[in-house]
Image (cartoon, rainbow over all chains, first blue to last red; front, top):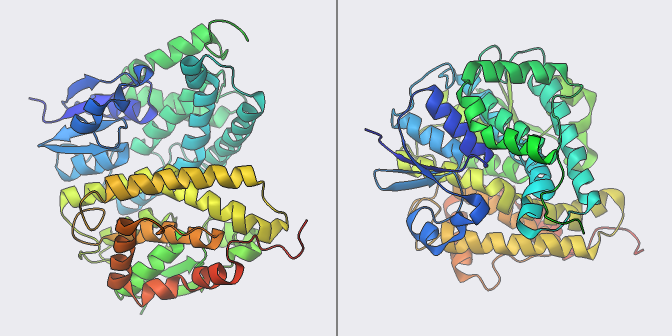
Length: 233
Length: 233
């Protein structure tokens, strides 16, 4: 029997990361799909019954309601629902590198990649207005700088964030980075090292990585980076 | 003997939080002051010998170099250098609430408060140029919304982030919030609940809270929110 409910939307990078992680490790959960595109997380019902901060992903476990992907992983580990595995190591320095990456990324890769996605695709989808080119370029530039840092500092001469073993830091990073394809950005172009790393993350987590990204890849192909508005202004 | 080196600047909120935390718990460290105002973290020497990401705070422990305040706390806890205490509880749900807050704050209180400080004070100090009023107002508005969320959702009817016991989440939050005084912002104005909470955080952590904020309070008084440029443009 599933021990916890998992509220998610595959259009949210941290939701996708947990989806891939749970399935790869065969951790059982009761899935509850929430549609961000219909702002289902902004209803009173969601605030009162799912999570007070009105975000995704969320878990409910023994009447405890928790948001934020990393907080969720750490909580489930301490509850022994997530076992110690190569994806979730116990070595102190490996854990510290993961924590360091996950703190660092918030205002770097996650923020710039997320803003690129929001401006170029999600906001036009909702408002039906084309975003100012200047703003898109600003976040594209930031994202490019952050990818440089990821490729040349985080990956250095190693295969994964913590060395030669994939961990959940790599899954979270890959989900944030792949999100930008929907904004017409190709994060692996002219980046052989990043491209190799992404191939390795996919090889270690498929078929769940592809399953988790099915909408991203579908919409990236369908819209080819053109903002999804019905008529050009 | 101190078991680790601590590189910090009291002008950085997470540096200040660790300074207060370590001193309150009488954890011994070898202090190394780094001056952000002189961009000391941007030198080749810093990148090669202190930390590859050129950020603060950083610790060196047994030849291991680590940045990001929360990663540092978790690492030192696993090394048994930080004991289990009320400030750093072992209860699983309390820890999950702390983690949830610390993830949430990155793109909320920390980002908007940090940008307010940067635009209104740090950048003018460095560039000697007055910031665009529009940009300052934008982050002021975001910070106000985030303070509302902190006051009415995070603190709800409780004294601290996790309930009735101060933890390091409160210290980190207080350091981020107090930073904005230097931008001429008074975060406790018309906020009796936030004001009570801040008084409690200070009561539990003084004299270290005041010591950690000595420059913030000094510059807030000296400049009264006026950008620190030598001549008006």
